[in-house]
Image (cartoon, rainbow, N blue to C red):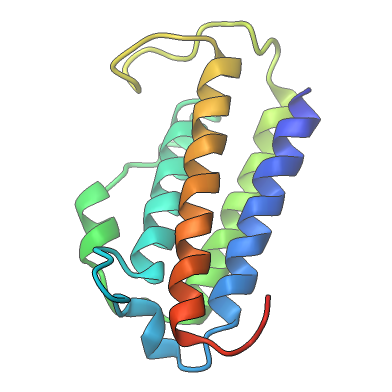
Length: 148
């Protein structure tokens, strides 16, 4: 099951990379479409921060310190840097999840307002990732002509 989680996280992160690569104009990554409140770039930073925090800091104990406000405030991260960070998080996922001892163990305290097993919290993280991947796809289709 741990490998299943890794596979799904990897697939969604790979899809986000494809979406970010599909913008014809890099600056469009940071623009809003219609009444959307967040750009694809900011949603990507948010996903990266979320996974670095809840997998990296909580499960891998890698010392990551999240700056959630910056995830929505930064507007000029180069596409290449976003793609590099996505690859970093993919590697983190693949390195961390398969080595967890027991998914029914309690998730480390202090990361969520509620408790739950690692399994439950990974489902929550995967759902969050899927939701924002869809938002990024919607955003990209508002600008890019390339099919992904």
